[in-house]
Structure formats: structure tokens, C-alpha cells
Image (cartoon, helix red, strand yellow):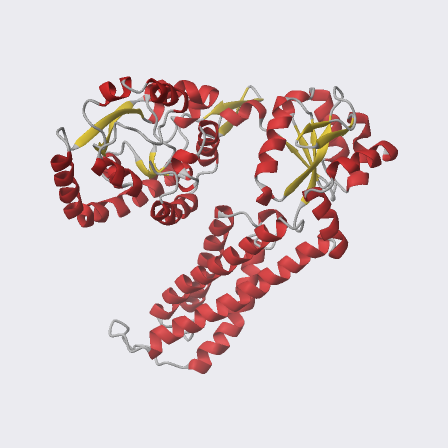
Length: 502
């Protein structure tokens, strides 16, 4: 196998696979991650110290009237306190797994852990001050410290993550991966990993009993051997991740691979979701007569998750409606002066669990749009095929401005207040479009559609339909309040850039 494997290496060059070899030659992969951990500890230490110092500056040295001097300022006292708190902070971060390789470069999941760890650290300080009355702290300083430390560590880790993403294009911080099974599911897995160069996985090739060794099956990614050759391939290419295409393997084959590498300290075995990929609402295991049975949740968000999302929706929508009130009136007047017809357009769309409702938008088309489209059969065919038109003759002059600035979607804030939509969510679709989501349609209806979402910040109308489906499914599978906050933040530059808005 080493001989045949060596011959297939020529198929890799030049590529990211060559880069990962060069990067490993400069700095070994274990040392790459050790250096990142050192950078993270230094970042957290520095940002924590800066956050505490800024809190002291704002609380005691700015003279802001709302801060009553019920606690005498003492820089020396707080400096000594911070010198104790910083190692405690780093320890708490370590206990939350924030220096564990598997939790790093994880976006919103990492932010959630940082929030929880920082909050726990502050509660520890509060508990200490409660148990020891002589331990006196200014409450405003403590609150400011929590917020500033949290924001600064967020910022520092965000910048480090961007640096890692750039280094991955050079071959650093990548894990060589082997996909077992070159069927349609395996090819889809490889294609998606190849598109997302920042994922951290570098697909070295496939293992498949039904393909010829050395034959490139996807973008020069070859079949490296059969199932019997796995151990040799793992050693030859220094594989760290084995990804099983579950639909390509039998139960006995999957068990054999897990028995061989399931407890290995050097190789992680991961299995594709297969059928469970379309069940994104979450699963529950219940026992009946000592038999574990898997059940599927009917909705994606329940309990505290649902409450947090509702709080975010109303907390931003209510003040937003008050601020945007005059803008609503100006837009309504402009629409009336530009073309005859109603100000608000109602579009019938799908809601949670198959319900339907009217989504409100400012009218951007002429009322005789169907007649106009009949005069352009080529555009009608394009609309039926792609569900969008870049140069749509039905759109009014004011409508083009509203679409490019996304102001046409402002009335959907009313849908949010009516709890039919959310500020962030999957792209809303009409009932006929459900067919385009195929088996994933059942998941789309487990959450409310959103005014903005992954599709909006990823290019809007420039994103192909298959990509829209994938983005929506990613959102449903990976929802967290942190993901919603991140997407709201990313929406601002996406709207200002007007990319894909037409």
C-alpha cells in the first residue's frame, strides 16, 4: 500500500495538501496548536487585565454623576485584587474547555462558553464578598468589569480566529482527513469541506471498496485504497480525522472501524448524520420495556431557548418600530406618488409546523406585474427556474431603491410582533417553494422564518437555491442566541454593501 499510496500523492500537488505538508515541515501540527493555546492564554490574561483597569478608570476616575462614591477609590487595592483574579479567570476558562482544541475556532459556541465562564467568575467574586463582609467592592466596578472583560476577550479571540483562518490557507492548523465511502453522500461531504477552506479539515482522499485506487473522483481527490488499507493510509498520510459516510457502509464495517480507532488518541472517528441530517429539531431517547427508542422533537426551540429568542425579537422590534415610524410614513408616501396601488404587499408564506400567514412588505412592483412578465417570456422562464430576476421589469423606480436598501422588508417587523416571524431565521418561502427543499422542508417549518439570516449575510439573491437550502439547514441545526446576535451584527455591513440585493 505504501508503494501505491506514494504513486497517488502526485495527484495532490500543487494544492492545499501540499501546503499542509510544507506547514508541518516548518512547525509540526502539535506545536501549531500549542502556540495557539499560548496565544489564547496571553490574550485572555491581557484582555482581562485591561477590562478590569478600564472598569476602575470609568468607575473612579471619570467623575460620572451616576457613580456614587460609596466606596473609596484605591488603585493599589484593586490592582492587588486583579492580580489574584486573573489566574482565577484563566483557571475558570480552562474548566470550561476554552483551551481545549476541540472547542477552539468554534464561533458562536466559543462565545457562549466565554459568556458562561466570565459570568461564573463574577458570581464567584460576588459570593466571596457576601461570605466575607470585610471584602468590599464597588458594585458598579464589578458590573463594568464583567461587561468590559467579556467584550475584550470576545474581540481578542475574534481577531485570533481570523488570523487562524488566514493561516489555514497556508496549510497551518489543518487536520488531514480521510473519507470512508465515495458514494453520493461521501462526495457531498468532500465537496462541502473543499468549499469551506476554513473548516480545519483537509481531505486527503477516499477509502472505498468499489472504486479504483488512485482515480480522482472529486477535484483531484483520489481513492487511496480499500477498507483493508485504512491502517496503512492513516500512517502514510498522518490522518487525524476519519469521516464515515454512513450510507456507504454496513453496520459491521462501521463497528470494525470504531473498534480500531474509536479510542485512539491520535485519530478521531466521525460519522456523517445520514438520515438524521434531515431531523434537525433534536432527538430524545426514551426507554420502553428497557428498549431505548429515539423520538423527534416537533419544534426546534423550546423552554429557555424559545424565551431568549422571544426576548431578543421584542427587545429590538418594539424600539425599532418607534424609531422607524417617520420612515414608514415617508416610504408610504413615496410609493403612492410613484405608482398606483396599495402601499403594503402581502405575500403568502409558510410558518411554523406548516401554518401559513401573510408576510408584509412595502410594494415594490407594478400592480399589473403578471401582464408585464408575459411580455418577456425569456424572463418568465428564468424566474420559474431560479425563483429570482436580476433585472425585473415589474419593479417600480421606488421599488428598486427599497430592494437595494432592504427597506421594503421593514413592515415585517409587524409580523415579528405578531409572532409569525423572527428577526433572525431561515429565508421565508411560499408554499410552492416547499418542493425545492425536498426532504429538508420538514425542518424548515420547525422555526419561524426570519427578516434576516445566513442567506442574507452570505449574498442574498446571489446565493444559489441549493446553497440557500444548505444555509437554512445549518441555521436550524446550530441555532443559539449567540448565532442570532452574530447574524444581526453581520446584517449591517451586508445591507450597506447591497451585495445580492435586487
